[in-house]
Length: 416
Image (cartoon, rainbow, N blue to C red):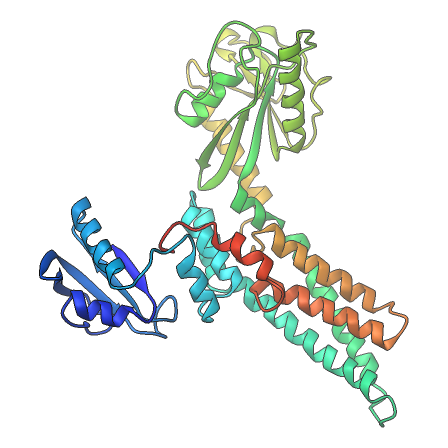
């Protein structure tokens, strides 16, 4: 499919398809240019502003041969059109008021979504869930700012005595709404980026075998020699609809050799920032070998005893046991990981913050509102309200976003 947008779409469509079809109806047309037959194709016509970009737009649904696509493309270029760059269509939709920035970013997230949760979150965002909430906050801020400007500009007028207290009530109400919202929506960024699960353990505890089993393919090299894994390996998985990045790390022990020591250092560093840790203990050495002195274990850790097929009478002391060889315990571990990840994400309709810039803008607005309450003069108080409103406006693209546009639209593939 070749899509075109802009004021030339009508004349170009009439030229190569012989006429402009009925809007939003697929029409079979014989495409020609300079007496040369190009293809028999379906043509869809979307006159502006009722189109994705808000401009006239046409789509040519062609047969997929390279010569067909090249022939139609050359005809369009010869008629004055130019190739679209990454994000050009979405940028025109933004500039023509069809999408705000949060919806543009949601469209990029939808294209990149790999799991059901990521898809659902992107669709909620594309529907304007975040921008509607932020706009409601901004409208309350603008109302407070208008009152504050009245206090500044007309100090000698007989303004209501309650005007100042009304502004304070609005600001305190916003602080009361925004603060818990920020605390409850951290999982939105996690859904977009994915939960990081690190596999830790002593050398030859079965970490690489477990990673291969969870991934369903050979990701890591498995060897009986200790210290085979020297760097951090990672693979992206869809576990029960949740986006998960699984890390296989170097075996933890007191290493003296430089390369292995560096691998252990990297393993501990990644584990420190991981959302969840799978700590493996080898059943054949249980409980003599204990890595807890090396790994900082906390509530994010799940203890797993591997190779239980070698110790059928082992006392697991409440830990989860598994055997990659027989498959025992693998499904139970998967269910436990899905449960823990689901608890961390807490995915619901309120999860709306998906990007760091959203959070930073809301946090900046919150700080400005808090500074308003202690501002030493009406002028400075008014400036804090303006800063708070501007920070919220940047989220949807209402103010001060020029420096963001190239970055945001550059994420798209050609034709979006």
